[in-house]
Image 1 (tube, rainbow, N blue to C red):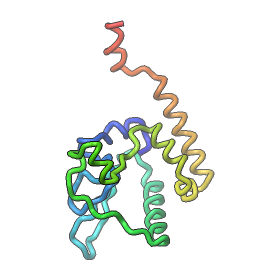
Image 2: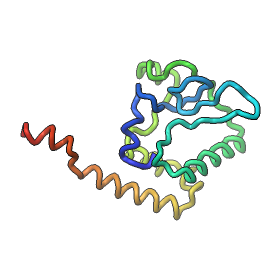
Image 3: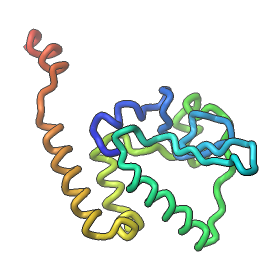
Length: 155
């Protein structure tokens, strides 16, 4: 997800998924592959918001799928329980990890993942990350109307 605002919807307990699990029917999961199979089989990646560049998103998804096939990776079992209802201990016990919680965390995760840089190419990757870092720096130093309303009166 490409914007600061994208991460405000990716919090546990809301409609958008925030955990790295898949399911056939559970909408709290990041990936949903409906149980019905055949010509209508589809894969739903449930985390991107409308600000996501669909070309970059699809390039990374397709490359990840092809990489998994090439390396013979097997998916984890489907998780059909409500992930939002699990405690931190249950999440850890089941090996369920969370998506980045902010644009800053996502930038760091992307920089630490050579697969993303290799897939997008150095030029696109470096320019994209540079732009996102500038966006994050601008955001973290700005004062929002909420902050003004909340703190101006008290302090």
